[in-house]
Image (cartoon, rainbow, N blue to C red; front, side, top):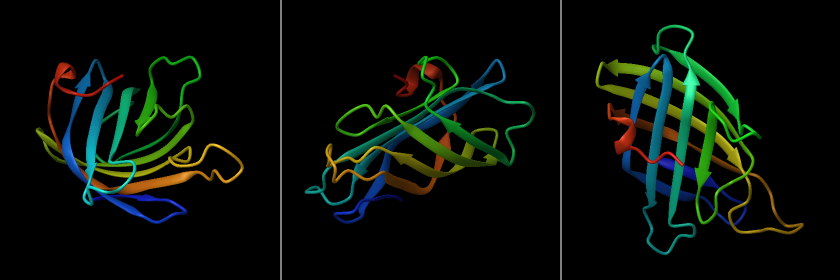
Length: 141
């Protein structure tokens, strides 16, 4: 389960789709979640890591990444009701098997409800298990 911590109250999300792949020593993964309470706003939260270069093994990787202003790889993406332009992510990866990883996320992005002086950064956090997929099977903007 993943949680969006917002000043108006926390929103719980469950994994709907997701996956990971390593291509040419670069890590890609996507997480698509849906709010557990159907009345929650936003009702979905999507996160993607796009082409992060691995310097060694994927096992026990720690990744600190922010949005690439040139919109090139490596990059990180968040989509709720809009595509967040500023994202900071702290990611820990544990390899379960060749076909599965566990990802712990701490992601900060723009406020999902306010766009004025009331806006505060939102924290999205949690742990999910992701199966191995191909690039074409994942949400990557």
